[in-house]
Image (cartoon, rainbow, N blue to C red; front, side):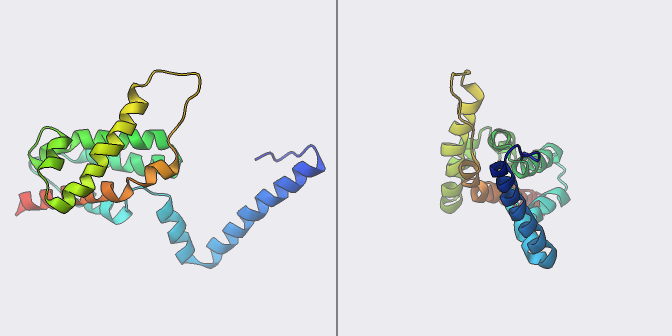
Length: 174
């Protein structure tokens, strides 16, 4: 945002930008529910799911790195760092198969129940290739970065994955 307008047109543009910000701040100050909606729109993994993951202790698996991946995913998403988001989603997919008793995420997907398989396939068949594209493609004259719309589509599948991990770790306990 240019805060030093050089012309009257720039000043009007600045005023329009500031009006939107002022309206947002008024709305947020008057309505705590609005604040919560805005906060939830700025995280990738539901805060309650992340808290539950953090609270699990496992004798077999140290979930410290998984929790860090999820926290960094939320931070990256909130900061509009969508390239980091897709790479972190892929990192989680590569990290968690042993919790399910497998060596690869494709094995996790193949051996899941029908409904879970359909959800996790979305990550394996779409998120992984996008992450691979951004990881392995050499620099070009014109680059494209992932957008929020591209990343948002993985929120439900990722949350189900983390919930399945939580369920598996609970099974281990008892």
